[in-house]
Length: 299
Length: 264
Ligand code: SF4
Ligand code: SF4
Image 1 (cartoon, each protein chain N blue to C red):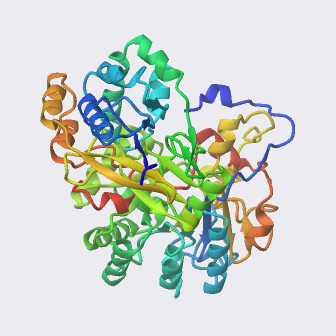
Image 2 (image 1 turned 45 degrees about the vertical axis):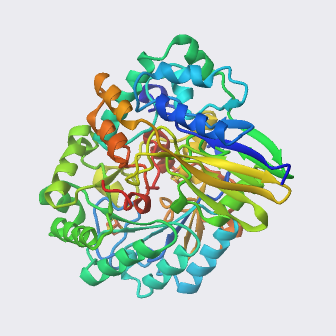
């Protein structure tokens, strides 16, 4: 844990730190771009039904990125969006990726009907590498969750997750700690209790701090000026713990350092993975959250 | 074959002096000329100090530091496992506090100063041993989470043909092209979440043809260990694991694929 009082300098000066890519351990793919069937108030890339700023990726684009990363010795793959299950070729994408390594698909769970749950569970049982489905839930009551994720989503998300669980695939739940108390251990315990009530007996949970960009900036407020990283704030351990020292994100529009910055000006690194192996500048306020909260989007 | 050489490699002792004794006996009976311990002496089991006479100053034994040994050796506050599951955290901390409190200072110093990797040349193969992975002491190398190409990358970057690791507690091995291989030796201190009460280590045979690795199953007096754990008032879920062969805690770090093979 980082001591906040030591980490916060109210008047940071000097250039932003540079960060080298150690090794490409994690490849993220924004398979459905910014297109989503929900429009959550805390979405840091403002996804929604009408946001096509990053469109769907084509199957061949996914194949090329996955194969290139595999040649580089990547350790794991993540699919996100938007909502990955809106893609008409998502099943082909999942199958081809799992030939090369473990995969996690991040979903809001709403589209997981019985048939899809059965297919996903079969993939989980038969693939050579591990396969995880990560479902986002933002509260232990409809009031708490729906205020962020939209009306009636609490029930839909939990039903999707329960179908997966019944089919034999135990999902991971991602909780964004917009309600600060959910990060505390009593808040965590409420999730375990809720899931146990729903028959999900071996729950896996991941808590994520919100990033104050995209739609979340309008909901929870923007970064303050002092919330910036400066040269000298990061020691070697802190550098290695930042996920962008070992990940890249591919979208239909090119390659980015991480899943967080795909809509941010100047973050795009190039057209192909090969173009994006160089160092990055940690000059974005969201980098401050990664550092202070120790955020990684990996499971 | 006159110049067959045998070695044993194990990890994850977890205070289990009874399985440690049984493993060493088995390896020596098979004529192993050297035995390698890849670390994590403490945690989980009873009476931490009882493993050290078996491990220290023994001519055929080479011992490496694991992340747990680093924490205990440096008198840190926890094992830095970082579980989010409150139950996992709770039990991990009990076990850590118990081990820290019951390890003699001289043994702590010994743990603190252990080496963190071994390199050998066996039959022209460059053999590397590490605790978690060669690049990070607490990196988990689970079978379902390690693409072939990733393992190739590790071997290439760390200039090895054969890599031995532990840290996850579940054994597996993978053969890659050109006789290269990666072996996770599992742990001898706790059964491998497979419903067997026995534990595993890696038996290595080296001759002109190359390096062959097989897992050896070792039974030990697990009931005596369980009785002692109860006497020491260690958590009952830990005792259950020793008696049933199924993990009951620390499941959160295990990939879903491996976890689905267990009962919890
Ligand atoms: S947070 Fe997830 S589910 Fe919600 S709008 Fe953004 S991408 Fe869609
Ligand atoms: S937002 Fe976080 S992950 Fe992305 S570049 Fe900045 S520090 Fe790295």
